[in-house]
Image 1 (tube, one colour):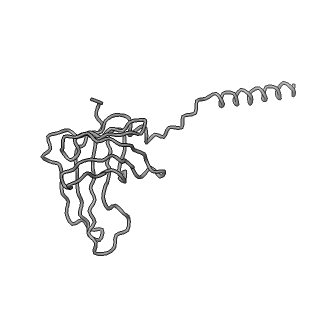
Image 2: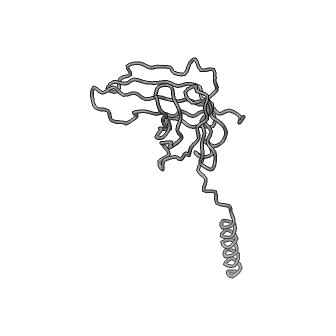
Length: 165
């Protein structure tokens, strides 16, 4: 009787080991799935002016733009932005996420209306929010420490997920 119980237990352990080893391991991170799940359409651009952590004023940018702006993240870690700063253009580059999952690193170069030259607007963007249907990226001076008396400017780009076009 004792041998039967022992053999039965060994059989169960062996079966559990085979079952566990046969399961497919998926090393993909969920945040990558959120980014690459479709196109992100720009909904608003807000610029904040802060003095010693007190909000001075807010600018709502991009309100007169009639062109749709899309940010697309591909699984091969390439990305593109269509019509950045309401200029007819398509910028392409590569993207990744920092190890702590708080910063988007997108190296694409875009032409913008405020600078005489091109810029990399999302090269070091803080991920404020990412979900199934919304994405908010913060660019600019977003450090946690600001010297007293310094005015800090940062910009939030808000996106919603849309069906790929």
